[in-house]
Image 1: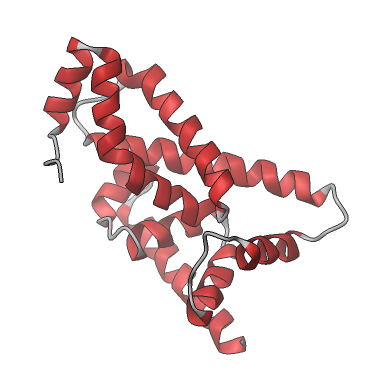
Image 2: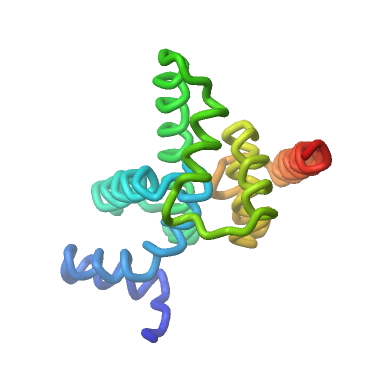
Amino acid sequence: MKPQLTDEQILELIQLSRDGGFRSLMHQFQEPIYWHIRRMVTSHDDANDVVQDTFIKVYKNIEKFNKDSKLYTWIYRIATNESLTFLKKRKKKQSETIDGDEYSLENMLSSDPYFDGNAAELVLQEAILLLPGKQKAVFNLRYYDEISYRDMSEMLGTSVGALKASYHHAVKKIEDFIKRQ
């Protein structure tokens, strides 16, 4: 396994060779970003599309990266925003169809060939699907990615207190959903 590069090393590689440096950036961040997005949008194919959009934005805007923050928090912020934008578009599109949003999302999760979770994980994922976009992002970042509230604050542009409240509300909604099952 290749050792992790520092932000400085990645940015230096990008300055030397934009494409080569960007490949190093992708190698380091693509998998965690994929899973972050996947937990937000549910579908493997949709996650791949959002990952691609995320890294296109990163590639186009790498010069605007503020070196006062961490590279991964900047990329996660872009990924979260792209995921939320995708979810809003999907919700709007689905509300224009006959099928309800919950029905479509639950069917998509249970019929996804890449989802190999057990029954408890399926119930958890169904509960997460019902969360509003920002609560879903905060829950996933904290629960699955174990991101600190301070780093989340940087990623999402929200105060630590508001993030803790969002996480608490998300957990409460998930617990309520699971109790009803």
